[in-house]
Length: 453
Image (cartoon, rainbow, N blue to C red; front, side, top):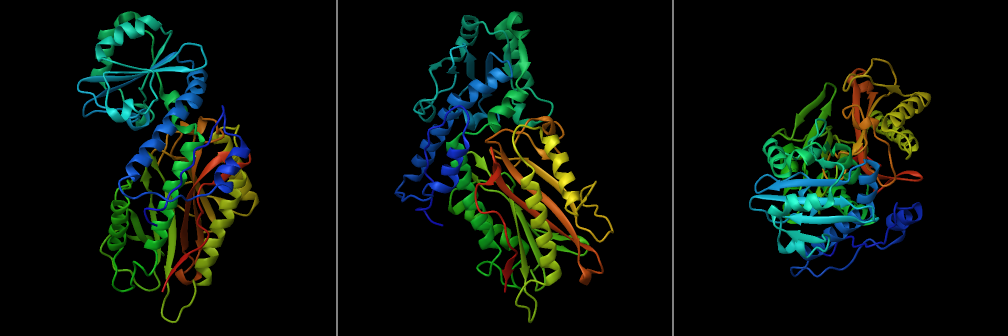
């Protein structure tokens, strides 16, 4: 991977991305483009983020504001205390208070304004209709007289809870009792805006995915690992250096590089030296242009005289792949995440797997235990859209829609005879997009155990 690598796709979209567009996006268009490396990469990324923002404001914002019955959405910012949606909105500079304001005037297009927020990168992004000083807030709201005003207040997830207590008090003081009584939570609006995707977003997310799986698979190879010499933290820090090299981010901190044995995880990103016969796993994600992936990979370090993965470990991995196929075949738009979860577990049990009721608590039966956690992904490693995951109870109630990005995550536990019948946990996780056909991978999903010689 070098500076000539990239995905540079701009596609027109209409109200909802149709299956034919998704096919073209994922399979029918060139994936690489030659880039000028002399200072143009920053400009390329900025242009792409502007395209995404304009597409979102044009295509997604009208839908989600009307679906949630919100006439005006105010997102507040202060220097040093920006809302979690600050990158989505375009950033900008604010010295005291700043507001992104979106108003549904019933004309089809959402009016967009930035008050008290300025800066070249924001203003040249062409996403906003009007820029003004922060002291125009009251007159701006009065002139539009919205029936309700959505604010980023949420008790369920931090990504929709950007309004601070003091900012809330200040808004009440500025706008007065008349409009303060119209404040409502924009929790669901924020989730729907974030998780409803346009083609330019999926292209950018797929680009992040290309970096994430390629770096991960290089990390689990003899390029990086020398058995008996390399430590787990050596691998983790090599991966961190790749982020530095390509100007990437991560929402997970130090990559989780660990060894799994008969008693579970033995060591996690520590100075434990990687030895022959170890089963290695990693969990991490890459950040690029405000998108963050979440994925896993598995490796086996060949023992003395071995030329392939032991049959029992390979069988455990193959069981995980079979279970994953059942999972992806039972996810489709138009149902709630809870309905999808129920459908998935029913299908898994019909296929001979056993649902694990509590994480990391496999049964003693000679059967592969499965637990799933197919969570929302996109602008963070764990997104705020619908999630087919036991750890996202509120988002289990949300409807799955076309263009939602999901991390297809599961854990499969299968007995290993050499371990006295104890079970090996096989974690599988890669990122996909929901389409009319179900779910489709946005980069090559894991299909094998990496071999380290």
